[in-house]
Length: 119
Image (cartoon, rainbow, N blue to C red; front, side, top):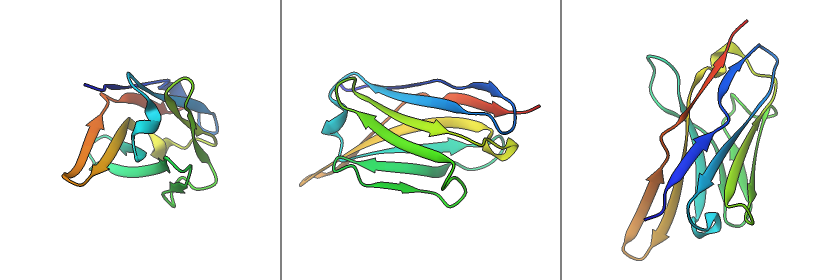
């Protein structure tokens, strides 16, 4: 069973940067897509960014131009580089891998990593 694990969260001042990692116990490129989501305190989970196995990337409008998603197949990691962090970026960040087959879609989730942006 493939497992995903996020790391790299922490406390950072506004304007600062963090790089989150989503590590896979198996080949990261087995997923058709890997997404980053976040759940701010007291709010619903929201989608942040996606990278496909063809390296197509997408971003939520709220993070476009500040966040960059990338993948290292050799290390089986998807990164989320976050620059220009704002207090509104405070959330638990989770990664999810999805595989589409003829039987349907299967998703795997990590446990999340806390990002707090505060002075």
